[in-house]
Image (cartoon, rainbow, N blue to C red; front, side, top):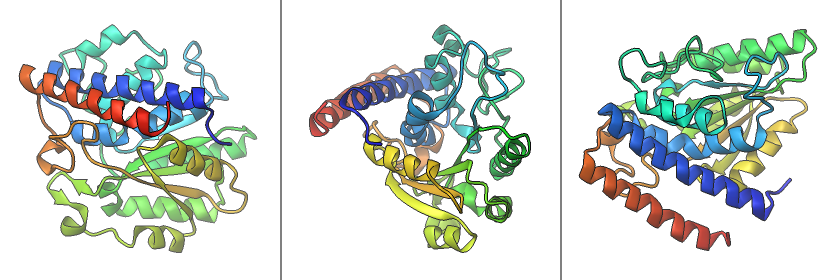
Length: 286
């Protein structure tokens, strides 16, 4: 089902706010994995504010949908999403990566309300998500499990073992989303350890594949809807993204995999985000 004009406006407005949150948190903490946080934020926005069946007032609700952020280093994006979704007060974000804060560089499900899995060691999240999806089926639960991975993470063999299991057990209640920003900590993915042809590999492992624009809400919605309608095979949504998206001096720049922003850079980053959304909202007619 296509997004309504109201849904589109709200999703883009939410993503804009979350990008500003990411910049602020990176500044407050003295550094964070900001590049990958900015590339994945539109994916997390549409999942949490459109699709996930959850209740922040009852975070342990047994019949809730689950999301595993396998690229756990994007916690700087994940924490503000959970806060803006109502799991905790946004003021708590100011403690990000501070001593005794529940919010670290990687998410901890024992400390962060709304977090379904502790992640950070890359390659493990999809296996956890497969277990959750299979468990839901065994229990007869109408639960969807979403797993968000990075593309560099697809170097890990455990990702492919999990994909084999997802296909073997026909886990159509599992929706895998890959943040394909093309960069990893030490360079372009295709120079460090190439993953292409990624779509063909996913298909060879038994997945159906939908390719989308990971920064376009309508494209993301179309891909997720196709995944939710799957009958025979689980679906992988391959989302084409830009590392550092929204902050012009960070976009497609390897050094911004992890970085810090001083007062001047923070102001410049906020201005860049404002400028991007002015142009974007004119373009989509919002």
